[in-house]
Length: 310
Length: 290
Image (cartoon, rainbow over all chains, first blue to last red; front, side):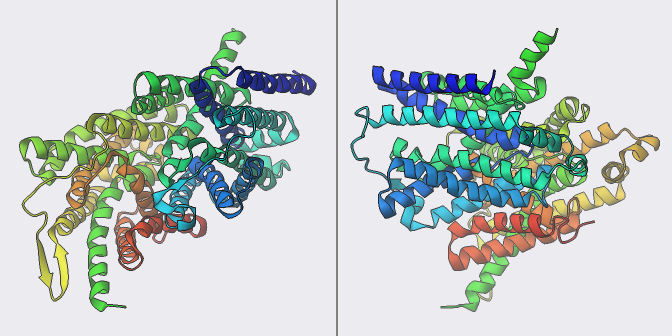
C-alpha cells in the first residue's frame, strides 16, 4: 500500500468514526470502543520502542499516568481545553521518554526493563505525595457540557479514533523509512549496527521519545473519560501487561501487529468484563500472553506469514 | 524534633527488616544472579508462599514458618517445572532474554490475578504465639514478628552460602554461571544443574512468603512492591553474590526504615526503586560485584 492509499484509508477510518458517533447507538458501545482505541494507541506506541528497537518497556503506566496527571495539572491551574491537554500530556511524556532514552546508554536488555518498572513506582510515589493533583485521595473532574455530539462519551470516542489513526500512521511511516531499518538493525545487534555507521543513540532517543509521546497522548484524555482519577488506577499494572501483550499477540515487527492485538484482546476484555468479571479478563490476558510467547513468538502476523509462505 | 530513641528504633527495625529482605532476595540472587534467568516472577511466588501459610494457618492453625518449610518440596517441583518450560521454549532457541522476560512477567500476572480471584483482595494475616510480643532493650523495642523472620532469613542465607561453596551441586551451580561449556566437559549436565538451582530458588520463595505474612498482612498485589526491592538488592549486592545480597538487604532495610520513620511510610517504597535506578545508572556491577 502506498502512502497516498494509507492516507485515504486513514481519512476513511476517521470519517467512519465520526459517522458512527453521529449514529448515537447504545452509549456503552462508545464507552467500550474508547478503551479499545486507547489500547490501539498504547500498543502502537509501545511497539515503536519494544517491537522496532527491541527495548522492552515495563513502564507504560508511568507514561500513561504522566499524560493523565499533566492534564489534571493543567485543568487545575488553567482550565485548559482538551486539545491542549492532549498535546501537553504527550510532550511531557515525550520528555520522560527522552530521559529513559539516555538510560539505554548504560542499560541494555533486561536491566533497561527492570529500570522502567522502577520508574513507574517512583513516579507513583511522587504523585501520591503531591496533593495539588489530588494525591492519594484522587482527583474528581466536573466536566463542562460537551461542545460536540451532546455528550462526552461520543466526543471522546471520536477523539480517540483520530488519535489512534495518527499513531498508527506515524508508526507505519517510521517502519518504512530509514529510521525503521536502523531500529531493526540495532534490535538484531546493537554493536554491529553501530559499527556499520547506524546512529544508534540518536535512533534510540527518537524511539523512546516518540513512544513516550503517544503513551502520554493516550493518557491525557483519561481524566475526562473517567472523571475520577486516583494514582492506583492511572498507574495500573494492567497497562503494562496489555501494552506488552497486544503487540506480542499481534506481531511486533509490523505496524499492523499491535493494531490486530489491541482490537482482538481489547474487545475480548470488554466482552469478558461485561459477561464474566473484570478479574477474569485479566487472567485471560496473562494466559494468552504466556501461551503466545511460548507457542507463537511471532504473533498472529507471523503465523499468517508462515501459512502464506507454505 | 529529633529523637535519638526514634533513630535507634528505626535502625534496629531496619536491620531486622534487612534480614527478612535477604530471605526474599535469595531466590532472585540465585536464579537471576547466577543462572541468568530473568525470574521477575519470584515476588509472585513469594506471595503464593504467603497465601499457603495463610490457608494452613487459618484452617489448621499451623505455624506459618513451619508451613513455609513444609511447602518447600512442592515449590521446588513447581520451580523445576517452570524452568523446564522456560528452557524448552526460550533457552534452547537462544531467544531467552527478552521473550523470557515477557514470559515471567505474564507468569507474575497470572499468579497475582489467580490469587485475587480465589481469595479476594482483602488483607490476609496469620496468627502465631510470637506475633505481637516484643522485648525491650533500654528503650529499643525488638518485635518478635520482625526478629523471627530476620533469624530465619539469616539461617537461609547461611544455608545457601554453605550449599554453594561446600556441596558438589552448589559448586556446579557456580560453575554453570561461569562457563557452561567447561561444565559440560567436566561431565555435568548444565540443564539439570540449572533445573535444580531454579527449584531451590522457588523453594526459598515458599519460606520467605511465610516470613512475609508473619511480618505484615498480605494482598495478592503485594508482589509489585517486592519487584523493586528484590532487584534493587540483587543489583546492589552484585549479581549472584550471597554475602553482597545480605549486605545490600540490610542497607535497604535501614534506608527504608529511616525514611518511613522520619518522612512517612508513603515515601519508603520510593527508596528501593530510587536505589535501584541509581545503582543501575551509576554502578550496574553493584557494590560487591564480581
